[in-house]
Image (tube, rainbow, N blue to C red; front, side, top):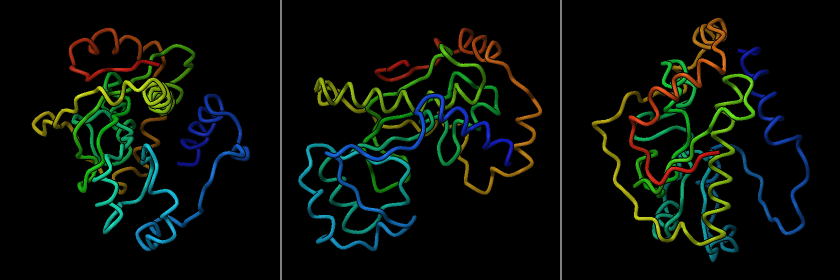
Length: 216
């Protein structure tokens, strides 16, 4: 597992750089994982008059906060291509299944269910600037963020009609416990090349229906 995440960190630094302080116009609050639902409305009030709300990598949001965010049309970034792959580590499992054409991210409306909101669009990586599969999956993170910056800035996200997820198309729903040392080692031992990824994309990406796709 350690070797697997070393590769993840290398790709993360390649596309996002090293850690740094937030810009001066950024305000943040630090919380432990899972503590968001314990924070009072009074504490979060300064953030509740925002123009947009984007949820990324959050623990499961409950109570008054999820009601408020859903009411205000919050957007969620799901790292995986819904409705095909849902749950956790979706892009790993798509890669493990040799479904590299289904590696990407889904930008959808936040809902009370887990990653079940209506889809706005998909953000998908290309193999450009990628040296390996870790680069390719990391680019799906960058694609999500670049697409949101662009589509919020130009206002086009407001013009997108959302679409309900078709659960009959689901290939896999995975949980954290499914990703373990054994499957990580198996994936590393395969030594898939970026040329193999490109071949899968060429053969399969046009066969799938992606909504308002953004490519990075």
